[in-house]
Length: 264
Image 1 (tube, rainbow, N blue to C red):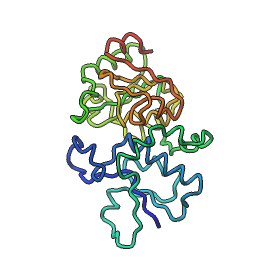
Image 2: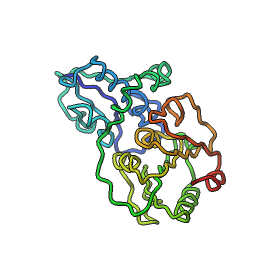
Image 3: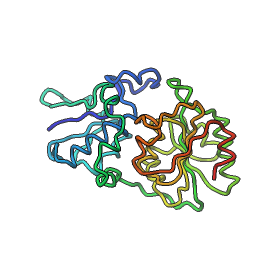
């Protein structure tokens, strides 16, 4: 059995702030969505690896990326407590050269395989009375220029409510916003499911790995809060063409006024 480590974190209790460039410690969510996940599934579908002797290892909240495709998926949090003496362990990818040399994951795939790759497990969506937006909240010191202020999030939510729509929210510390409106923070898996609903009319979020969840499941409008004006359309780590697996309509906003004027 070969164990492919595609998502990892050696520090589960501390805030993931400045460890983003230490791949031996933590593999970013966006990098996993745009690189390691794509490559390992491509290897399976092209018969380079076998489902019978492959075990996928990733962080617990990311396991749903693989569970409908691979037979064996375990949480990294459990894996680190296992006896590794007889295991063949492959950490993939292991350094920045992978990202640099493979900027465009979409072009690395046969287009006919994309629908299969996007075939993730879906949870049951509660019956929503109204159409809704899904919002991703990012609050991190690392790359803090890509954060959006909590006041701007409140302004966006008020705009959504005034238009007669509902919303759901996910992301680290998203409860700091959601609880004001009686909303619980969605898990990544729940967010993926809600984004695939016919009642989801749009995604709203900053440049972030968390926002890339929408590129797996929402074919509608993606309203990207690029207030730092740092979007690189051809970089796999940003919300642009290089990672637009689902063919979404991506709209970039440079400030909150643009969002409030054009959100619909």
